[in-house]
Image 1: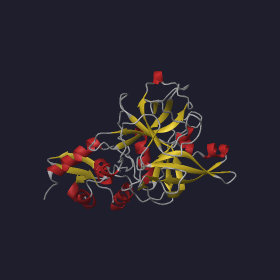
Image 2: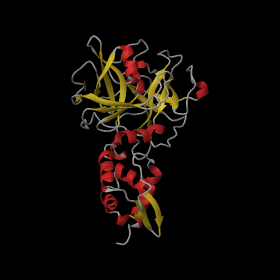
Image 3: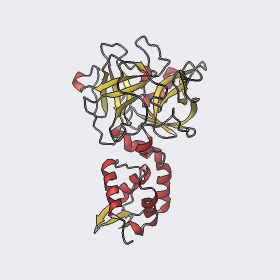
Length: 354
């Protein structure tokens, strides 16, 4: 064939409208814009991997023009393409992320089912006395990376608190039991993986909690199970409406300052800046959110997800916010600040692909 089928191009074009313009793969301006069949390694991706997240993203970035029913692409060297595809496979496709069995008919602070929100990880720390404790929350986005708040991994803050970052626990439900069961329904054994490294956003400031977002890289990949799955990253242009029901979940502290031993969830909604009861000026990269049923996130929820169900096909959940700070557990205030995830998606992808 002299050219790629038009149907294939329109699949690309639709993907271009839906997928993000990631900067993880930098196209060299010296790369010639050629017909795709004249760039064999890119043409091979069209044939074999066009429907994968990495394939669609790469082709979107490489596409340079469409002329006379022919697709033209920048043609980088094979090594760069292979590196991108290998690392890009870390990011799950929309058909394999954000899937859980939770329902939106929940009120404040109810217990989840045993397999709800399978991407939420508990971060473990060691105290100066050698004791292990659960602290912040995190969200699994690939088999090896989790997204959390920067202040949860900030060495300066941890040193002040006398804590060392140790590991992440995935597949947890009830922190009191070794095997979690609800009736005859039992979860698989948890996977606890040491933290290999962390990456705080370069603009993060502890004094203001701005750009309060970070990646955790585990020492190995985890195995996906019914109780351990990734959540979907949002499109960079995602706008969450104020009337949209959002979800939070985790083991955050109760109003009495005691950590919930069992995973709980609640409905949240965005609040306008002028009605947000926090004594600080919010940036354009922050959400103010509050409970619809007097459920309150507390410091134990730091790094935890603010989720939105997006009706792409099966209503899978997207990670739209990371819990940054709140105003305590008092029901009368009932507001929390979340770092928006969508403005940082490019940074996330770039960091993972390094």
